Length: 337
Image (cartoon, rainbow, N blue to C red; front, side, top):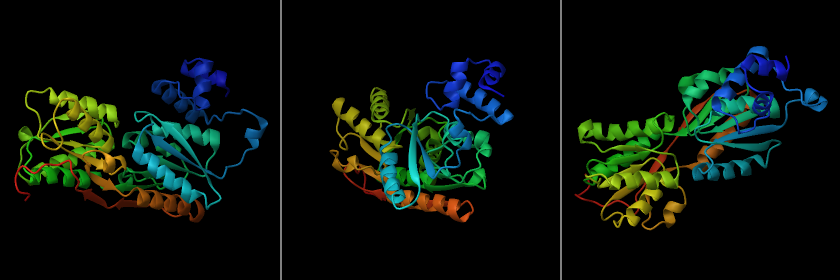
């Protein structure tokens, strides 16, 4: 089986097949999936040189990061890199778009880099269900729960996304806010689904029907999406008194939009975020948020991947505690309950 055979079988050009095999980003997800499926069927390996033919598994661990501007992941990666400095392993990082397929990218990296293990910062369960069985390396999914996927070589360390969102929204409800709007990621995102479930749970516990809840505006996990989503809400006939943003970057973008619209936080609209990134401490007003323990998430993920590689430890799954940090971005409409 050669690259020409792969091109002939899949119907794609030699250039496209080559880009997929060499892990280049400028390829459609459809082409990448079709070509990788053919690679799996035939057990194809790219023979770029005699050196590569003889290459043994390297002492590297690859970290695949979903999202190019995720400040939570950036801080976690900083902690992770410091931990690996005291080991024999080299941590290499591969950034992909938040909508890209992290499992397909991992399979390509396994062919090209031959790492000892994989770390996934963020992930979509559907992608793992459809392709992770082809990956045999010890792996850890960070900030997403992999327990229900039941892969023997896939561990996970995550915050309780549902519980954290429920806590944040309940805090707004307890302070008298009604029809609380939500700014979040794509409904197809596992993280978004869990945080939206937490939003609904907080309302259910207080007997608030779906028709009496606020709207949900989708976007990407970025400042701009938070700004655009909030601007849309501000131009609705009925403006919310409070917003739950599924990420601090979205919350801060929303706060900027509120200010640009001529309103104030929290006097006119209250905002709660999720993550606990540092900029929230220095924004004005300081952001009330659900804090994820980035240092613990990084440390436990590091310990898990090393134990799986060196000791053959079984897959484990942990949830790290969150904290509601009450700052200045929430106004009390009635006495808290």
